[in-house]
Length: 108
Image (cartoon, rainbow, N blue to C red; front, side):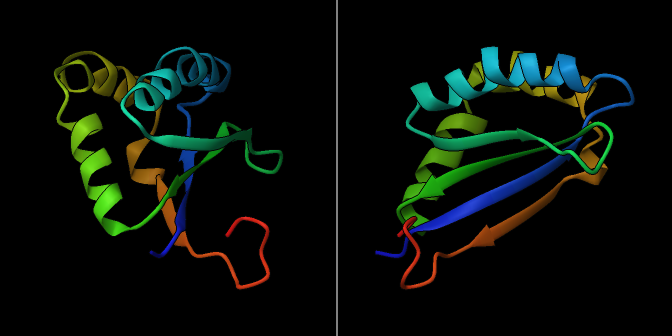
């Protein structure tokens, strides 16, 4: 089993970060968590205007595949949440890093 994390950097549309954070915390995170996604952190970026960062944890590749399908193939995501996300973010500015904890990391 190889635990890993996704660190997702987003750019909200100009002036819409507060709206994005509310939507993320009120809708996106609860929806994903209800389907088993382990969202472990949510941040506003202090160095990038309209920047936002969040993290998810996965036990292994197989689990991530199951969770990705559960979330992103869900009718609510496709018909409601996904389109709203597209209105609030600049998708072309998204950067996703996949990181694995070092042997001494408390996040192992």
